Image 1 (cartoon, rainbow, N blue to C red):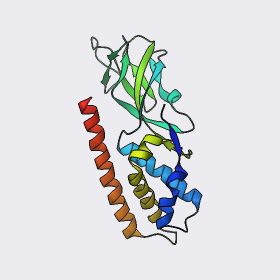
Image 2: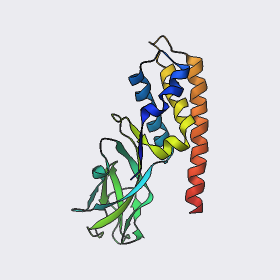
Image 3: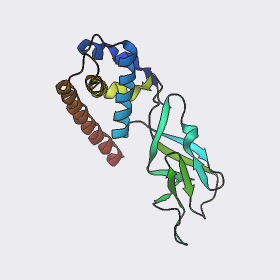
Image 4: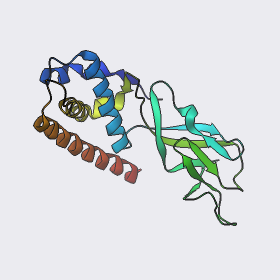
Length: 193
């Protein structure tokens, strides 16, 4: 499990550029920016044991009030230390090795010969929409990227007095540049491992 930190830790930096935005609005946009970053880049990954029942792996048990499952990572399903193959469709031809396919984001269906039991699932996660708690490692390592993402979201609110298309575009570009650097770092880590 990852350590969680409060979204309000970044509030001062966002508020320094937009001082008249109410704190709850700032905090919610910090959460949304962190969700965007975790969607763009698989920064928050965890491995958990999940029991299969009737040929199904239900990943909703990995979710709670602070996090949602984005997807199962490639090569992210293993049983007894062996990775299972992922297939595109449920109707796999006879004779295929054991494996699974993704029916929904939280539901994996096993191929017919794959036995039920304990599986190790590595999932990409993101903060839940209603949370005010964020993964500490993401906030620590990508603090500036999240701040730019929150500022982008706030500046693009057209009905607000603080709206600015130019500022929104500038922060969006910095957010995307930071996400690109983060993706390179994550890819390097998983390639070197």
